[in-house]
Image (cartoon, rainbow over all chains, first blue to last red; front, side, top):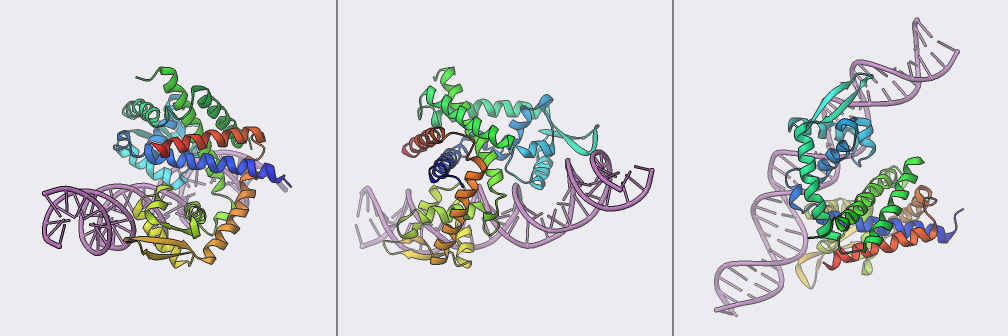
Length: 150
Length: 150
DNA sequence: CAGGGTTGTATGCGTTTGCATGTAATAGCG
DNA sequence: CGCTATTACATGCAAACGCATACAACCCTG
């Protein structure tokens, strides 16, 4: 049975984190860089760009996203149709499909990413000090790693 | 022109915050308390419960949510059909509609809220110390308030 | 106090989503 | 080995979403 103080601390933090995320994300969605593709689609391209050779299985990619597996499968259809990713069978597992950023996809991701960096900074750059941002990054990273290790 | 260090600090923090939110939210959506209603619907009930007399205009409510105004209007239809909220014209502005939690709606929100507190704690309670949670809450609250003041 | 602009909500419509399920490949167990 | 369970992805279908727009009430300026 956790102590009331411990319950309150973790809940207050999650609540505050979630509200902040909603507030920032509302503004991010209005930024010009997300006229061409949605934030969800960009998130897929971004996650792919962090993978070895811009390649990932759909399952592994899905792990880092909020959308369901069927939704990701269909989003992959659309991104493929736009020429931003390719689908290839995984040679080591015939069930799996490897998604890879095309050159075009990688280029678009980088272009949007650069704009996005400026956009984020314009939105929140003066909200906290550099030290506070660093602390925030540390704490949220620690939180995420704890979840992933569960 | 912001310094590169400032750009990096705010972006790294947002990136880490966002990833943590995705990771935690993925697990939250699987919790049993969100079988009956979705996390998005709960979020509406929760926000309403924080309003004076459980009442808010649709516009004001929408300010705190990621979904669009038309989506909220239709979600209100569904919540109304389930008997969780009521719609009444605002006497001070005939254009506006006041949403109010019904007793049933307030009861459900509290019941889910209580479960949710336990669920959150089970997910992240041991990820950080109480002091770290407090710092995280402070920083994310400061970030949100900065956004709202823009 | 008229007339055009603005604001708050609802609705038509095409798109995206999730759930349930189907299919094919792998893993694991006797 | 063979047979069932599991895993990875795709697809049918209904629900939910966002965009554009309609509509009505307010507001404001002359």
